[in-house]
Length: 298
Image: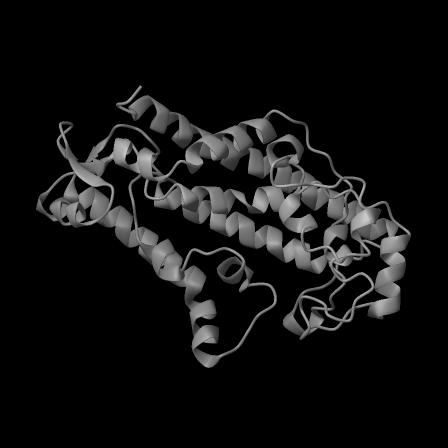
């Protein structure tokens, strides 16, 4: 993952912040080049395009560098930022985030901080085996990735669902279950209960760290947003490898969660993601707390 100065109260020289911005842009260009090429050619990728279709941050927005709350930009070039929303001159000697204006316009901070804190306080529950993707294809001919064949066919997919205990706790996965699959889940997640149900072993809860990072842009350092993007893309790869879809044509070997070996492999991946997600979640919470400290209204 990249490095970043998060909520440090630092004043960066123009040479320093321009170098950081350039490194960020180069990193994002490398990460988005294939997607932009496919988009221009009218092509679709069932794994790598997900972060640009499911989430609503555009590549150009991801590329735009922001220092984040508590870091100030000095030099003549910093004044260009005053034309952007949420940037003002500070007594600290540079241009930086207008915290009060940002918080007034983005009330999502309360929810994000509460959700991240709640998830961080819980142990990771492993062993869901990615069956949410299977439940989305249960007893239907209208699967979400119609251009990709089902590895076990429709009948085999249905049998996997029926022979397992489905225990999905994440609302944004559960809401895509087919109607016949919904009653098979041990929980009935809702948006209102998300902070009560999300847990650090859940692939989708960890994938969403990217969403919460960009929801708090420009208060969130852009390097951290991209760290979350890279992490989310890696999780999405496992999500699809463990799904009922056959992605070998795209170069992805399946994690066969219908077998004992596949289950064991999935849990190892899941454990690793839980540990790494905890680190990123902690970094996001640091930024949330820095916003609270910097809020002139408190």
